[in-house]
Image (cartoon, rainbow, N blue to C red; front, side):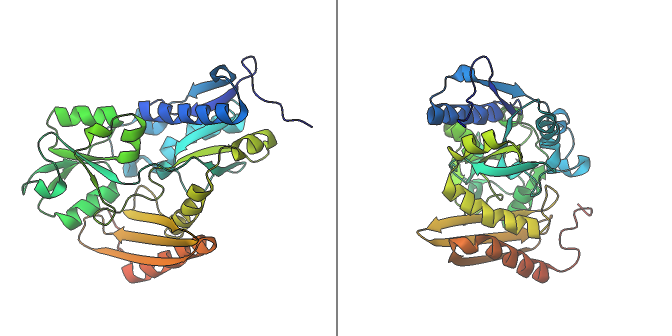
Length: 316
């Protein structure tokens, strides 16, 4: 039986958060599906869903529940049938999906690096001792304090535009954003410099867009297979296996990056004490098909080296 394609009278409903970046990612998904199946924009409906993480921006994520705060309401709407698919920034996604949902479609990955953003300084190394850095990311905080313990760090939550406004208001002297997000918003010029991964290893899955669907929705499975990027999927399989084995969340400073060179996969991982006082990392290579096992093995090794209490943030 031929697949029934969406149409202006029966549109495919794409669920997303409402920030400019989230909408840009939903529009990219719509565009790719439209090209793959020769469909007009009117065959899709962008459904904006406000999540708990978007509503509460005056407290750190670790205090209000972690990564699931950016996905729960969206996933509830998918399970109820209110939307057909959901578009996510993969660095925000828990490693386990709710029963009945799955993530097996990824768009081509963007620039994985962190962006250094400041009105007065070009690079992190240029920051004077005692300068204030704004970030809501425990990973970035820990990496920064490990590299520059002489700097002061303050909380800095909100979407890209909110953080840039805080910078303009002198809440901090600099901040970090994802290069991928800036590129997708056509705002790459905002970055004074991109921080190479050797200096600051990115968050697991940074720069990747994932599309979540219902497990039993065969039409969506078929359509999404037409836009899935295999290489991104292979890289994220290794990175997210590493994260899952560490039981990683927004409460844990973890970084990880998989890169492909032909049939070889290189995986780098890092865990840090939340105060930046210690960092443990590893760098391994192997076959692409071994990526998930490499991730799990690396996690086990780093956990053994870290020992009890390594990730305790309550002393901060």
